[in-house]
Image: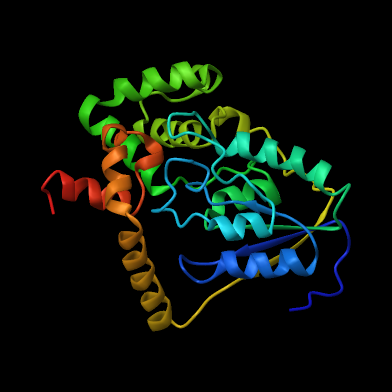
Length: 256
């Protein structure tokens, strides 16, 4: 594939649904432009979660330099805000060597953080929203107030703390981004000093589902169940609250 008529430096962003072929396509582009790949898959950051996150193969990792793959432990604290800062700093260095850099992954929030910044209030991940809802249902509005008071005292001082929905929204943003909710209310959109070209991959539904089913079969053959068993003691960590792992944890707990 030839991608023409873009300015330099340029970040080529490849997104799309699970198993659509983002990794293969990103590697093709990286080879074509003799460049590197930045992962925006928030679960591939964790070195202990290789099989269930469809880690790039050793051959793929050796063929093209990859960044933000296996760079964290499941017990490390991380946020989309920190990712944004680290990627932008890395891009400054990479664009001194490459006219084009490829970014790929299925985590739209992380892609948006790099491309647009996270000044606009992000939509929460389903995982984060569930954690906030569970906190409210189990411990009530007072638990929300305590968390918001600690994480965002400025907002707490000026907010209607009787409005539990507002508190839940603030807490979702704090937990998901690692920044105070009040910070987002005062920001303007960041300017990026590089061009961007975005490509969304897709396939017919029946083909995509077939690829997903085959991928799961391959994962099980590669030892996904054993990988999940080693991670079972840490199943409450947010990093492991993800598709594939959650279902096998339930299997090990005889829930399914």
